[in-house]
Structures are given as C-alpha cells and as structure tokens.
Length: 184
Image 1 (cartoon, rainbow, N blue to C red):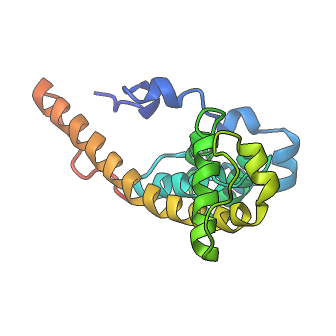
Image 2 (image 1 turned 120 degrees about the horizontal axis):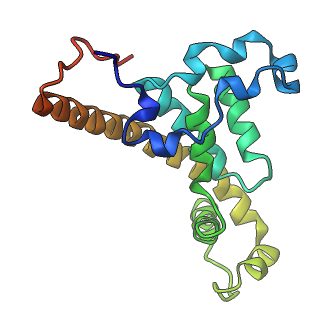
C-alpha cells in the first residue's frame, strides 16, 4: 500500500496552497540563493523544523514593518527550518489582530519603561502611537520573543496531537501504522 502523502491528508487542504519548491525553481530568488533553497530540510515537514519555522514566523509577525514574510523566509533559510511554516506563521498578525497586538506591545513597553499609560483614549491607536511611540517601540522586541517562545512548544504539542490522531485512525481502519514515525 502506498504511504499517504501529507498534502492529501486532512491538514493538506490548507497546506497545499503554500509555496512549493517547483514554483520557485528558476526564479530570481533561486538564482540569488542557489540550490540550498531546494534542500528537503526546508520544505518537508518534520516535527522540529515545523516548530522552528512557526517560531520564526511568529517572531516576524510581531514586528510592525512591511516585508514580514520575506524576513521570515530568509531567516528560515539561514536557520534551516521549515520555510512554508515560517511564511504561514507570519499570518498571525493580520488587519484584524494587529490592533490588539499594537496595544499589547504599547502596554508591555510602558511596563518595561516603568511609566503609566498616556492619557490618550485607547480606541484611537494612531493618536496613541503619535503621542507616545517609545513605549510601543520598546515593547515590540520582547513581545516578539515571548510569542516565539510560546509558539514553539505549542507547535510541537499540536504536531504530536495530530500524529497520534492519524495513528489511531489508521489503526482503527486496519491500515498498518508506520513502524517508526519521523520525529526529527
């Protein structure tokens, strides 16, 4: 019996839209970064590499700068973690979640600097950032590190949970479970 490919599994309907190596081969990015770009360690999902990629992407998702995806992909390339996971994790910050993150970073910066929040109403984030940008900028890096430290073990636990469910489903249907799953 053929092994089930990860893109055909239940999570694959979401993961199959991420970039694949065959889409990038021959592009300017391939010419700049070389053949290392296509090593399996960057593209094939393994437990530790996906968790590392998720942590890298979560770190970059907290940075209030354009090019989060490019930064996460480059750091994933240099640290040899799963690149699609790093790119996908940058989507943690989106137009719906970013106001919450900006306010949380501002409050964290106020705590680190030892000052109280400014008197600007909290419903107007742009006015808040114009009046007191320093607490926000101080809170960005610690919040990114904290989120990356939370996402890494959470990704490992999620990986273990789904692998156990897949093994149980295969055992229930009578398929032969793999002798030694790749845990890397």
